[in-house]
Every structure is written in C-alpha cells, then in structure tokens.
Length: 262
Ligand code: IPE
Ligand code: IPE
Ligand code: MG
Image (cartoon, rainbow, N blue to C red):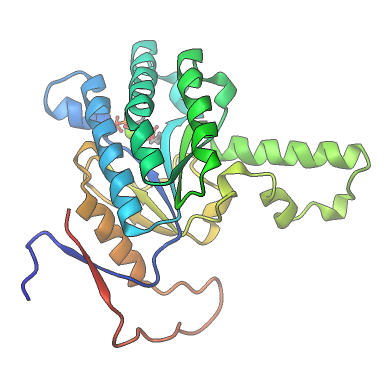
C-alpha cells in the first residue's frame, strides 16, 4: 500500500487527551506579503477552523487554543478590534459545525473584559453546546494569562481560609488546581507553538508542568492538519516519565495505525 506523500502516521492508541496550541505568527505571515497584520489574523481564523476539524477527526477530548492573551490588550486598538470582529464572525459561522460534531465550546480568561458584541455570541453558544454530550471540548483562551489564573486561584483560597472555610494547610496543588478553569478537562498533555518562537508567553502555566512541548516554525495561518498530526506523532514517540524511572509498555506489534491525510 502506498501512502500519499503528505500523510502522517498517527497511532490509534496513546493519543494526547488535551492539546493546547499557542497560535502564533499571524502578523509575520501578513508582513511577509506586505499586507496589514489584520490579513494575517483573518487567514489565521481559517486555520482555526481547519485545526478544530482535524482535532475532532483525530479524536482529541480537549483542545485549548490561545487566541488572545491578557498582555495582547497592549496592542494597537485597531488590531484588537479586528481580532474581536474576527472572533465574532468565527463563532457565528461555526455554530452548526460545533453542534453537528458534538463539540462543546468553552472559554477561559478574563471574559468579562471582552466587548459586548463578542459576549453576545459567545455566551449563548457556550450554553447551547453544553447541553449535548460532547465528544470534544474546544476551549478558547481569551484575555487569558497563566499568571493571572494562578493569582486568582490563590486569591480564592485565601478568601476561603480567611472565612474559616478551609485551613491554611489545605492550600496545596490539588486545591489550587481545582480553582483553575484551564484544567477542567485535565492537564494539557501536549502544547504546540507555531511561529518559531520557543517560549510559553503566559499560557497554561500551572497545568503544563509535565506537558510535552512541540515547537513548529510554520506560521499559524500556514498550519495544516498534517502539521497537527506530525505534532501528535512526535508526542507518541516520546516517553513521558513524570519524574519516575523506566519505560512504558513496548508498542504493541499489532497496534493499528490511523492514517490521516490533510
Ligand atoms: C498570534 O499572532 C495571534 C495573536 C497573538 C492574537 P501574532 O499577531 O502574535 O503574530 P506575530 O507573532 O506578530 O507574527
Ligand atoms: C502568544 O503570542 C499569545 C497568543 C498566541 C494569543 P504573542 O505573540 O502575544 O507572544 P509573544 O509576545 O511573542 O511572547
Ligand atoms: Mg506573536
């Protein structure tokens, strides 16, 4: 059997359950074409559509996309406005796709800071997709910061201690993580960053303790489903030790590969 040239072999077992993506490189994509940055964001939103479909097809349980950081508010107002307009359009156009494919929409971050026009689409869609039993949860990190999330969780526990609801010694990593919305669907197993930078930029800081990191040079608007499959294949080739010694069970010789072609 010959496989198409651009195919990537992904095993049907040992899939990451939760994948987080730092979608970076939209601005440079536009810059390379002498176009305004907004053009890169528009193309980037097409990549979001394709990668959500690919993730669902692959069978991921949770996908968290870093769409706007708390620090991105420092960007020029025109760019910020364009990003929210694109998000609103994305949500409106994806409604049926999410419902038909049993994808639950979730959002983390300082959602109260988002413009009303975005909230007006985001909030009902979150409620609507919550009702059905979802196969995959798509979490959009919007006005999100990992440090901010940790600080908020600490603040909540501090209040509970002050109110006598818990003892100081009950503040531990379990009670802290229980306050973190980004971990509702488990720690991220794999974090992908596109755009060539090797940094985390305040994404899922607490949860990524044992995540596998995958950096791709491809700019986000050019990220194809096969690039996602390549990242997952890389994850599957790694040995996660969580501080322990030793090897996991050897790969079953008869493990059926899933062939996915972008
Ligand atoms: C990522 O692309 C999208 C957001 C941060 C909203 P960038 O806009 O950061 O693109 P570069 O890094 O400038 O190329
Ligand atoms: C990270 O990208 C944030 C998102 C992808 C939403 P940035 O472009 O904001 O990060 P830095 O500035 O390169 O660290
Ligand atoms: Mg960037």
